[in-house]
Length: 317
Image 1 (cartoon, rainbow, N blue to C red):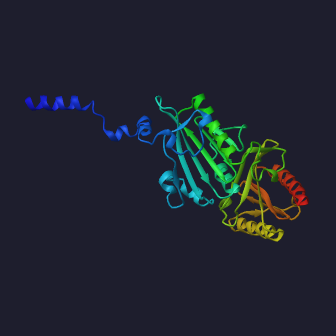
Image 2 (cartoon, rainbow, N blue to C red; image 1 turned 45 degrees about the horizontal axis):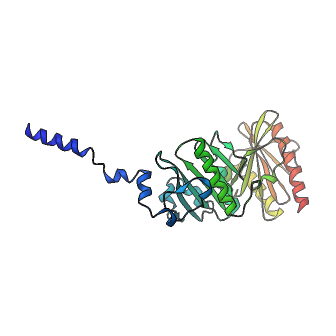
Image 3 (spheres, one colour; image 1 turned 90 degrees about the vertical axis):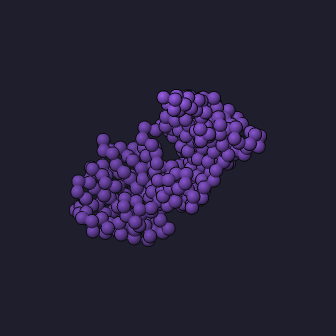
């Protein structure tokens, strides 16, 4: 009984002594472990946002990216990733409210837009106050020049949402940008029926075909049918027409059947694959078409719109 009393007393006293490893996870402890605020560098000058850095910036390269985003690194690495810088900013230390900012340098605006567009979250809403940006409940995602940014907050409070927007605008202002910059590839698509939030850039292996790279896709709604259009600018008109032919031959090798009858666009290939239709053609330096359409009539109409629009783009050159 004496031993039990001693053990019980030890447990009672020990509960008031929190493990330092647990304390280290708390934002307030992390803050005090850092250098004074004036000595801490900032990934973004957040003075005007109401946020203050509560972690030092971290940097990751191609060889260490997996340490920060294990499981998603391959998407970035195959899309031209150069570097990642991250930092946390605190809004209310007592409440534990903070934002972690991820700044991916993707080397080119097209690469940055690709990873931005390929990861767009369902149920997101466009943020019209920023160039190429959208929000989810507790985060903001955007692309600006060579950079893809993620700002992820600890909660969905209005104050934290406002602070994230302020941080993003400060980043844009400090990197020579302005709102209203069109998304890469948006001008390639005709406006009628075009759904801007659906625009994507697939940098490699589009539709499972290795030769299809740098493919822009966009969703359309025509006569009640939802369709996917695709366009890619190639180095020359010969390269575009050769790729169209190669893609057609690949589809046929997988079992697609060529549809008889006049094509909707001169020189186009119309193929049926099970219960969907694929239209492939070239227009000058552009490879274009409609992917996996459920309606041949709607797909043909969209192909005609694409060809007419791309003809205009060629005349501008």
